Length: 164
Image 1: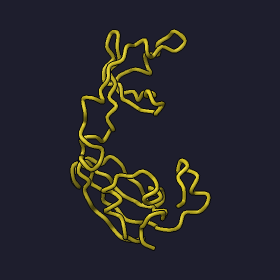
Image 2: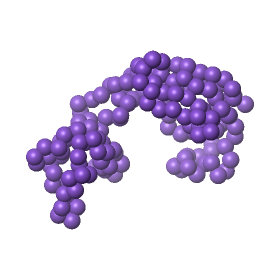
Image 3: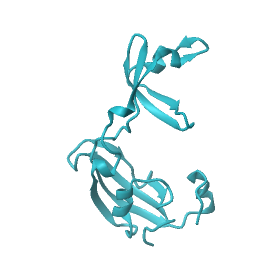
Image 4: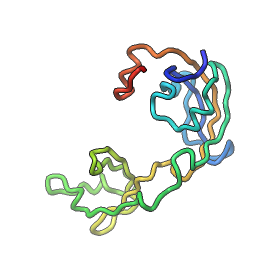
């Protein structure tokens, strides 16, 4: 069966930054594959373009330039907040706002965002909301493990996505 819209795809791959000799940042295996429903779940467009039409057993190696992945890092996504915004019951959990910690927040529209604390100042916290792979060219090397129709049980995890 070919990879096409609505098919459940299982992949094993290695993800490197800046080419096949770059830093390995993610790896999946045949036993623990990356699984998604093609063109239904939100994926990088170029990633799907490279996989479309492949079948189980096909190998792949391709690069997704940063502009077609998570974009360049933007200073607009680095935001400084007063420490008072992080008070819970009048107290500040210093460990939760230490540099390098991931901080879940909500924007004005109620969307959940995750940022990384990049600086803990005297009266404020600086958080980077850029995607962790922003500014990076991504290189995928792997193989298609399986392509099939998703079962009824596999649709609910799609956050309300319809089968149509």
